Picture 1 (cartoon, helix red, strand yellow):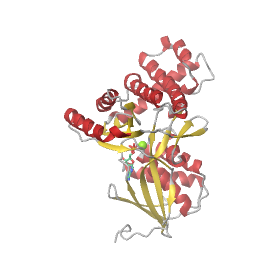
Picture 2: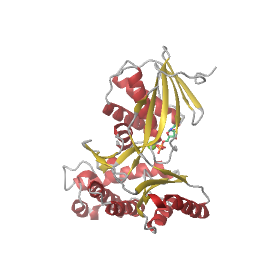
Picture 3: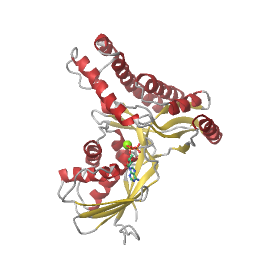
Picture 4: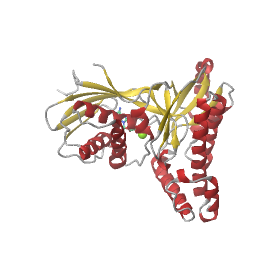
Length: 376
Ligand code: ADP
Ligand code: MG
């Protein structure tokens, strides 16, 4: 009989997805972001099995993976690499890992920019840390989960997703400096406004290749700027005048990519101040500015996202809207008056359906606590 039937766990972990209010593609440029975990999450049930074998079953894709701890290597099945990668990274830190069974299920839409991938990595690492008393700190869990995504999945992501999934506190957003990992928890007081996520239900295949291209373009920009400013390490260290000084030595495309990152970092800092002061109007304007940059300068948006943001822009009960996540699909995040939500969802759903023949999904994002144990 399959191990996951009538499964009695030793412990249960809840590992959330995340939203990011502003600061897109800035994390891997060592800049600023403003994320928080949300109330959509992956639940992992875990138990020891007193062997060297591991079994993991996902109720979401109805797939099972079985492997020995003595022989961990990357798989050709993409989802398995999130699991194997975490185990590999834990094995670099400790030899206390033993065989286990795990059943997981998720309320997170997968591949929609809400970071189901980090929720999975961090949830598994957190659960195994508890189950086997590995003695890993939260920040070690963040780093090893990100390393799993780099080394086994092959996505050279920044630190934001894993950090937000593990370190969030309910009711706050994190202003995170992705270079120093200095964090400031800002209370999220939105008054009569809510954060509405609209899921395009699109995932353009361009995303992976374009992500790698953006990494390379940012690095080309940094190399050019270094010729005049040798101390520069990342675009985080660059201001508009330093970029302007090398304009003639880089392509217009590289210039635009770098300009977007410099401007987006400034927007995050201004947005954090606006949020602290309760100035939601200014905050919303910065969200629109972020989308404009992502659409025109960083070029990671797509017609579906642009349609949704343009639609929101015409409504006075929406203060701000932008694409969220890596781009080329996924969700927009909208700062919308609570009384207008229901009607707006119907209106934009029908407009989106007429234009793209896709039924969108809509969720209100509630800021939530990071990865934690659930009482049995
Ligand atoms: P996002 O992190 O925005 O949801 P990614 O493409 O980074 O999108 O990660 C999605 C991948 O993570 C899925 O394709 C799958 O491989 C893995 N994954 C996430 N959640 C689950 C789950 N509940 N069951 C199995 N695999 C999952
Ligand atoms: Mg992801």
